[in-house]
Length: 131
Image (cartoon, rainbow, N blue to C red; front, side, top):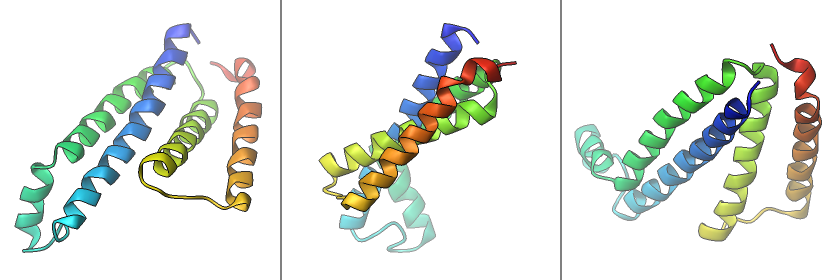
């Protein structure tokens, strides 16, 4: 694995988390306007196509695919996927608390910490897992 592949994985996880958050922000606005399918499926498609957050989320998912595919050229998926998903999860939990007012209990935060510890153990031995 080269540094470029590691950087690509970091870019992929940031883009993936950003895509999920943008979609949530967009759907919150659509929900305030009556919901995605208010007025039927066609109206819902028009509403979704007119949401800058949903469009940006889609672009982030597409860019994530490119960066993640590049990272997977030299990384084992058993290493790359846990890092991407868990780091993305941590980003989402923090931003959701900060921007959306979502709160976790102490037990849930303990679970997040344990997940992060587990993935750090996987990542710390990543060198032995490379192609």
